Image 1 (tube, rainbow, N blue to C red):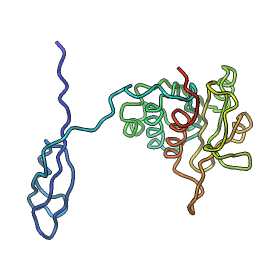
Image 2 (cartoon, rainbow, N blue to C red):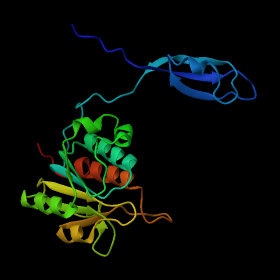
Image 3 (cartoon, helix red, strand yellow):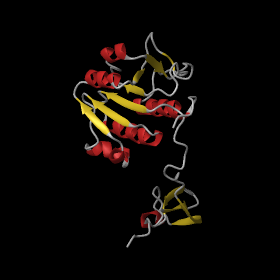
Length: 223
């Protein structure tokens, strides 16, 4: 007999102390929220409980961009890897190649930020990222690196000379970037333009922007 899933409900609450009046959100069933997390005064509900505003799985279009795989080249942080896996799952990435020191999905900190995406994404581990890249090339994937440098062009300005052809996106180490040997194999090197004082974004943030643009931004529709 199947069990009915009980939807998670949330609640807006407000502190009753006039000098505080903190307004915050919480799970409706969390009794700790009966006290203000700042001043510990009694709180009151504001409006009725509400359900999580989730996007139903697979309700969105399958994506306009190419068949996409990802190669993570020596990403040090398990938190970053987990966040990348979550974005990859959302964007419909077909396979993730974890290379070098990149922690794999069985690492508890990866699971902490992937929030289950690590269980749904096919992945492989290679001690040598260059070997993984060669294998991807042999299967017919074009390789793009998300990296700066003289070769690099803005992701938002480059065209696509092979619309719909399978693509492998490479992202590199948080400090040292993409291995130069991998860059030599890449058909293109692309970057996200930076208008502020910093020269780059966090690797997981940059990956999320890039992968969604590639899958949904400007490419012809594919099945």
